[in-house]
Length: 75
Image (tube, rainbow, N blue to C red):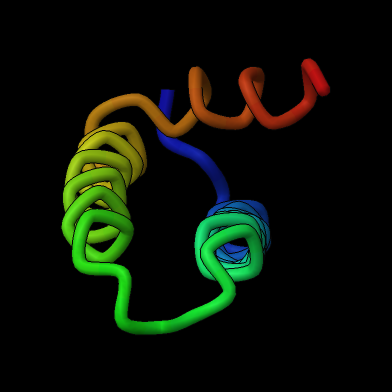
């Protein structure tokens, strides 16, 4: 069930890039609509969604990389 090292590295890189892209996209949506960076509710929501998503991704990377790979491939 263990993934090969190059395949695992590729998965980590893909997950990191997609995670960063999603955070940037959410930030642009929230603050672009608000028209300002001083929108406290957006910062709180963004922080919460980032922490929750990061926890899920790290858990899947450690315990079930195959499931994470299938999830990414399903797009």
